[in-house]
Image (cartoon, rainbow, N blue to C red; front, side, top):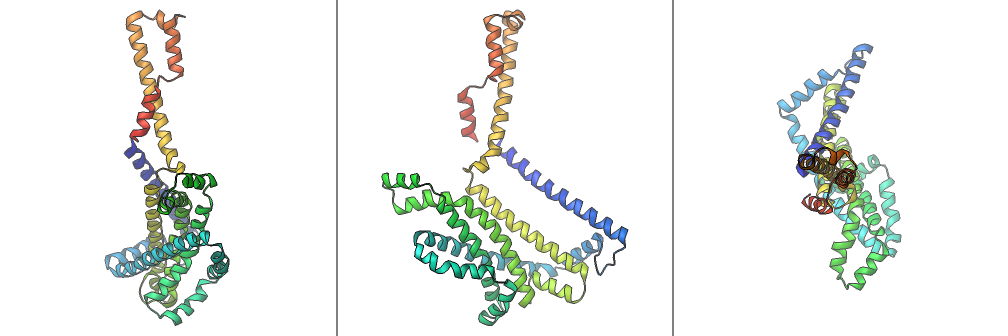
Length: 326
């Protein structure tokens, strides 16, 4: 049952993506055909598909895709780690939060395109400048999520840990991190999308490799189909990295109420079907033993069966056992 629920969720997600993409392509195709839009302004979907196919068949996109993916993963991991550490320290040391938070807000609000030349001057034109830009875009969302999660811990929980004489590690691992995970994963979803944007911006401004470089090359040569193909590859990369964070969220937040809603719905439906089957068996047995009058009449047996139908004939123990099996 659990596997069927997960499979249905995956198929539903794929179907939603396919439907939205199909509707978008249809509108795009109809608009280009009806308005007779020139190819250098907006090419038709077949031309973009041919350009995308050439990129993958000839293998020119793979090295660029790997470069961008490596930059995104490296910058995101470092930025997320720094965000978690700084968020935890800011909650514990309020003076440090007051002193450093304005600088982090300044770094977040500063135009990233304006920061790229500075990073190139300071760190060179290679990998370091791009990773630093990605870190600057990932750090603040993850830091804010970590702080929000830690601030949401009820005081009663902390008092309970003091009464139980829990160690600092037990408080951190069993309380603080568990309460922080929902907000932390939400901020990491924002951060991974920001990481992809940061990598493309950095490669656009100063890169000789990566998807951003493909976009720059296509733009400078007025190759609009290639430009749109590069954008599509970038979107696919963003969706893939976002889904990775979503899978990790489902793995670590299986206990959260937001993840239990689907499981509870499956459980309730299963209990309902079990109850209907039990009631049907009761009716068949009673019909064979006592005849139809026991069911349709006002005898004590017919009343019990009617009550069993209302209660769906589901013992409490079976529901609990089924919930544990999920």
